Image (cartoon, rainbow, N blue to C red; front, side, top):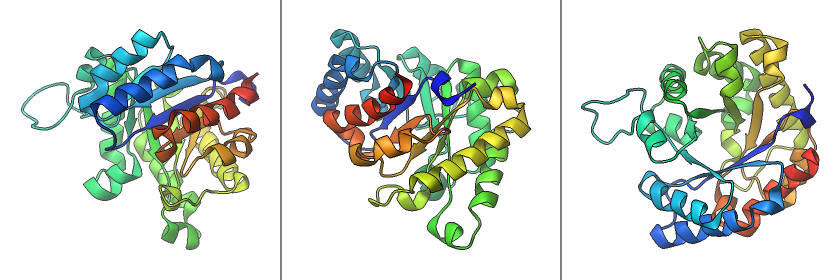
Length: 261
């Protein structure tokens, strides 16, 4: 399967931003202009408390835009105060969930093992996980990018069979590029994306690896999206700050739509 055969996926990670009214307005704007990014899967990942109104705004605008959670527990239910179970996300209209984002790993101590457990729970509930991997600046400067990403991919996706891997999106997010304004060059990003695809082939098969979509994340903006979209193994973007403005988010999605046209 070639890059053109994989449907690009552009997801907006709103993180802990916006309020009720702003979230609804943004979702309505994206959904209302959904046709501008035909051929690309669009996903909005608002804070959990706004999932229901955001999903409602998308539905009212008639846009084919999926909703995702920013995190989930590996437990289905129980006495886990403050956690959100994967079936709960499904119940309020989510199709996707972001797992293992570097902020979760660095600020909240998530490990490859915990991300792996969450991915399995998400898949069991019918969610499509977006599993994040990526190295810090210190690790890149020490020449450890390949080792770090390899460990994260193999650990976070351990035990997933071919069918599960094909439902999983992998997001390569170099930690040093998240929210810093820095962005990996297309050559740097493509190199790691190719590495990830090779690792997926090792976990399953080359045929399976060719079907998995691998996003790039890390200060993705309208002015660099087209260069990233031109890379054969970059199948979309996990967008942070730029996803908080409909114009910017849709411009990024349009860059990937152009590739799939």
